[in-house]
Image 1 (cartoon, one colour):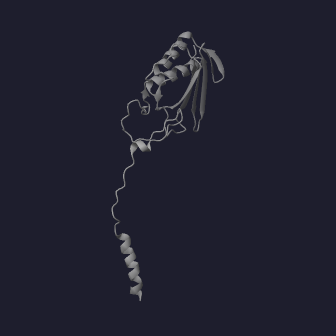
Image 2 (cartoon, helix red, strand yellow):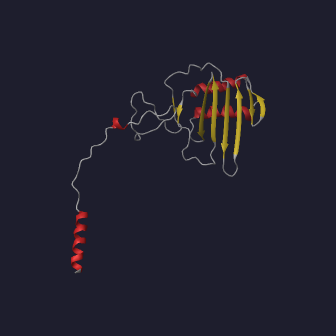
Image 3 (cartoon, helix red, strand yellow):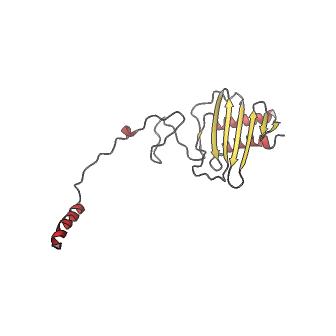
Length: 191
């Protein structure tokens, strides 16, 4: 009796182990899977790494790499109206520094007022143009940043246009670090 009950179980097990007939599933057409256009200012990367850029496509730069704008800044000769730099760090000893620098050289650094020379204002303007702040493309944030790392938020207003860029230590190209250093130094050493 037992062997009769085992027979249907054995048949079911063998049927489950038999391979199914092979079917061919067509691969999706790459053009049909392109997502709709993203919101302005939002870049969604949906391609495999090391895929060559199509002509005219927006390049996604590597971390700490600056990509030059394809167009010249039409306002490069206009002096900035205001720059705000906020540097923060968390952890056991949190820090926050803020400088607001105006185009006339007046500034406040952590609530203390001061003034820098016109030559230093011009040096900062030159650094803004060197990195092409209003047209640059770069990946400046560490996706795995810790609270111990400094985070910088740089906001510049010029000719009625405001742009803000956030960045982390270790993810900034030298030209951008030089701009941050000039702005921060204005508050630390205003003389």
